[in-house]
Length: 438
Image (cartoon, rainbow, N blue to C red; front, side, top):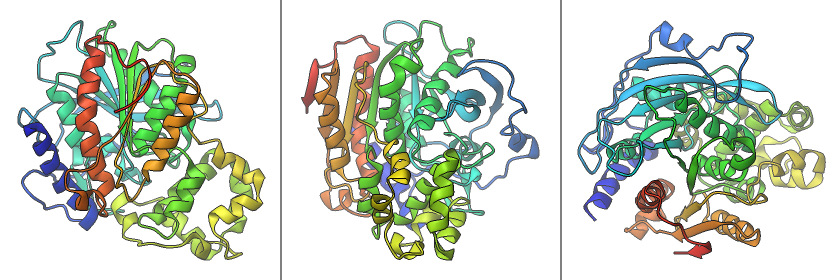
């Protein structure tokens, strides 16, 4: 209970950052600084051209850096040795691409069986501007302009993982920090980036034992990425000693989510998805972009430079105001199956996961409705998986759980359950057999 209260306090403070756009909050919030990165730091994210020969997950560069953010955990504030990494991955079209991320080495001992395990952390939505990349924010602490304000809100989770003695590797996802546009919502881009981050850290032999077990964890955008990784892990990365995947607050059906968010809070984030699809699929861009009016194109260009807080300030726009026809995005897609197929390709739930999975949702979530995770659970269970566990965990104060910060609140309660589930996987305990709702 004490650890839950600590997490709730920290989460509430960080939620205030997202909800209000301020960077001065309660004592439980991350310690932030607006220190800027040097040109040498920024150049780290520019990959060599052409990419050096290699395989998915191969390291291209490693650079140690000092983290400015500290975050509370059950064992106090956790310092960590940090490295940013640049590594090879493969995009949804099968082309090699460079992806950035970071590695955190825990100062805490690992008291479980075997060598210190690894958690590949899939971050939640940060935005689409390069300055929003988690590995950049982890050093600078926060960004005010351009595209801010934004703090590295994920440290509440990653530093609690460090407190348990895990090594943490986190991807920035494709195009967030590195050249090109972040391909928000593109299923295989996200899945490959997460899996290849785990491969990359295993090449750091001074950090990770070759016998270390690996788990994946993510919430929100990261939950969708983690779920997608669970589906393709056995075929894309069979070399990983993967023991389990936690995915919470999972956006798994893009068209349904578009319909739900349209005119709702964070509806401007739908432009992230359009930008991501246009970046990855030239055919989609060629067909969709001419349907947008000047306002729609302006919004797309604007959010491409923003972090999630700035995008939330855009209010509750309706996508029908972004098209020449005055039709919503979902109406346009219903009439254009040639475009809809690219959107539907991003759905998760059609491939049976071959590793144990734990799913969570906040039943009061106002941003990613729990129906998304419920439907994913049903789809997977119909495929007879080895082990899928699903729980709905409301925030203890239901009014907060259903508020504009309720999606973040659901992440706090979901991870409180996930911590124990991950620990059990690393300790070699048997997961549930088949499907089980808890």
